[in-house]
Image (cartoon, rainbow, N blue to C red; front, side, top):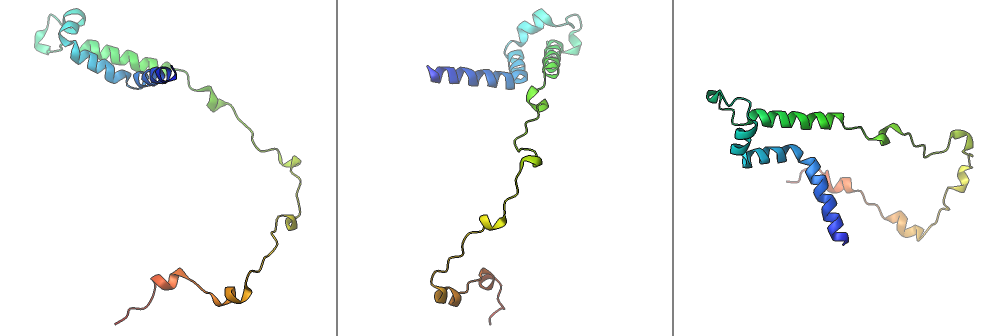
Length: 125
């Protein structure tokens, strides 16, 4: 059941996203019927409209519907995540400084690695 609901919602999103393309596909599939029923220029066959006027009207209506769609209300709402600075209490930095641990100090002092020397070196003959 959840798979069906997920597929149904995905199809609704895709239909909304590709609405103009679906109008063009519908026009291409039913071109003769649209020409016969909805064409404005039936008396002028030399224009070779073939129902493109109806398609232009449908695409204009779809564009108007998209432009009149309300913008998301979430952009107008301001969410404050951090508290105001008056409520922030400064803490001493010594609390956050970790204690320095020395593990094998003699070995650590003898080891030196720099990736720069592995890449940048003088040319060898």
